[in-house]
Amino acid sequence: MIGFMKRAESLPDAQSAARRLRRNLTPSEKVIWGMIARSRMGVRFRRQEPVGPYIADFLSYDVMLVIEADGLQHSENPADETRDQRLADAGFRVIRVMNKLVALEPEAVEDTIRRAIQEQLSQARG
Image (cartoon, rainbow, N blue to C red; front, side, top):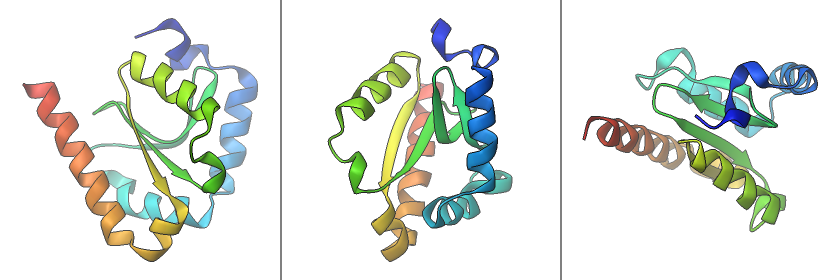
């Protein structure tokens, strides 16, 4: 794992921000958390997890998967592209789910997450 990604190296400010974010989930994050909480999908996720200088909306170390619930401000954002690349370099797969899709088609979002988990599990085995 790349040094900046080690959880123990998370900045105290990032940990404080993560605690605040956990208390104030967006409506989309609440829906996604309901889908993945308590290992409902066979792997454990953490919400608002500090990872180096970043805070992942949802992260599973079991399958090295990050799920981001995003609004329109994140579409084609260069900062998000850099962040995703750094996470990928550290071994994480990042999937981004638009808030509007979470609201309109939660079943499709759940299917996407399940598929990503299965792909990550298959990749780890193969």
